[in-house]
Length: 341
Figure 1 (cartoon, helix red, strand yellow):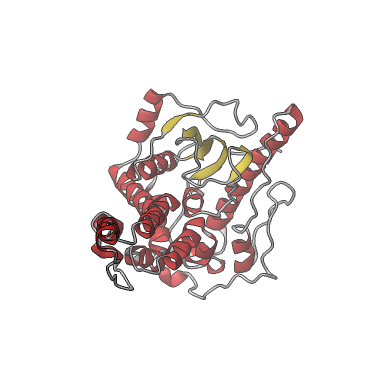
Figure 2 (cartoon, helix red, strand yellow):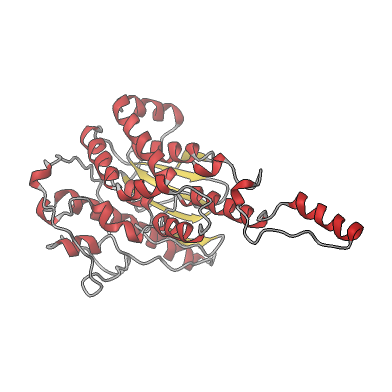
């Protein structure tokens, strides 16, 4: 299938021009889309547009046989074409058929939001302050506002390819294709990051690295995101033969610097804010919170006190009385201020 390069420029409509009618995704209206088998047509309703963002994860395929590798390569290209076409539809469809804030409509399917809900349910003792996270999830429309502002100001540019590694983990939660080191498959648009980056290009993750092809601002988002979380990462140009059936440029460092010269500091600031917002809501950050809950549960009691009571049992023959309930926050080292970030 021939592939054509599409540069997206959007005129941002005033809020009055966009319908604020709430959209509820009904199970009988939205069907999972197989990006390989089903062609895409311009959506005629809001439900049809939303359905394009609700896909199932591709099956993990760890085979290294040539035939299976070729199949995976076709899946990857089909995924990219689906992502590209969906974004084209999003910006060219009648604004009345577009949800006022698409990100709020899709929130419940994001891995990050599901992880947040789990963390909140686990925190029965109130050890971690998740109020800031909850506020950001409630005001998630800011993500769409930032994206609209960036798209309105960013310069047009032909797609450029990069490959990203981050300690052999899919920290950006890109949609997975083909081989994986673990069984943690991710569907397209199943994460906040894939929704955001879908406005700037196409992406996937295979085995130990992610691929992003698109605007240089998407490259900046990935770098800012991983750096904010202090995750070791590497970014290198994506060789042209990795995705042979998809058109993109592979730039050396010097050419990348010149490309970044074309992006003004306003766009860089906004993409940085967007990356920090997503990093604060990331599964990686929430995993840190959950680890702290585990530490607090392990340290539920005062160890020094228990040693003293054990010694008293040997010397006096009586175990001292202890309170029925213990406040975990009173124990030094069990949980400090860093749990409230």
